[in-house]
Image (cartoon, rainbow, N blue to C red; front, side, top):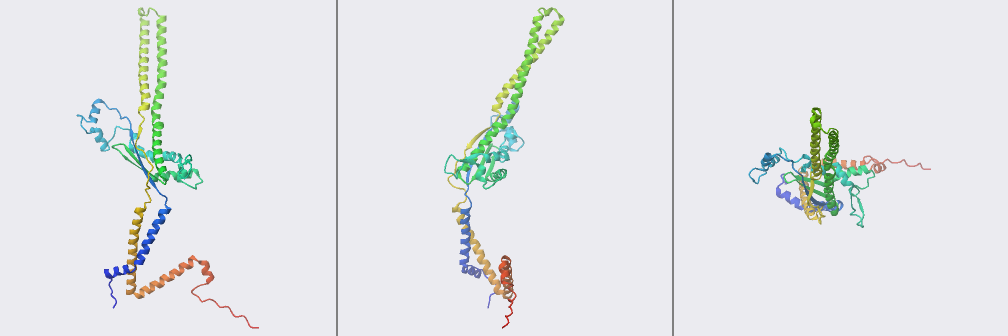
Length: 379
């Protein structure tokens, strides 16, 4: 008599009996993995890091002692405590590592990176160089669309992280060629340094140019007032004996002193601005320069093939278990199984007819018998 319940031993025996299906599914998964490894282009990963150094805002003497930690302790005092809890910092927001994270992922810098020229890894001549956009985007007739696509791909291939306490910015770059990945990472750091030299210095340069014009105007005013005082002395030899001339001489002296103080103050500010134009520019210090890797990051056959084999064995076991459960259900319910087979067969015939309408029209309706032509009359 047929057993109604399927035991675990019977299920396991049915799975073992279908070992060919398990091996076929596992081999298919491994084959798909091998095809993907051959089709998917390799990826080489490099890492580069840099830190930024910039002058801190000067605090008064008492506050600076408190910020640095009174007593010469190893702690950072109020400044480090505030930075730890995110309450503020002595550094400007545009000089923080978070700003460089936004800069490295900005469209402007990535566009410059995409338009930069690199040695062509596909060429046999070392002197050949092409823009990076030509290596990332191929067969794109629209240049603007190619640049836009290259920027999107660079955002996916570049991973930027930063450490607020140490000001360290870490950049990871993936590329199909080892030398290209290192060149892209180093070129990105060069563009950040160029941004600091060009954009950051513009504020100090504008201040220096303004003070330069004010120093020239104050010097001209001082000379004019001194010329007026000299002319007064030449025309009035005995001004000490005249009350009106005495008042005029004092007035001219105050004008000279005021103009001289203004000129000296502006001159000092101008010299300080000239120094700040160089000192206030943040400096990029490269900690780890990107080096071309010798081993590709992806795909890794030593990792993919065992994983694919294990996954194929699991899928094959599931397939065998499902087949055994379906076979057991069909033996328990033969009528329902026969109805399901007929429905599946009809659906399969309809799908074949829908995929090949020309052949179905030529062969006629399979559900009807073919029409017979009348026989020709005998003479």
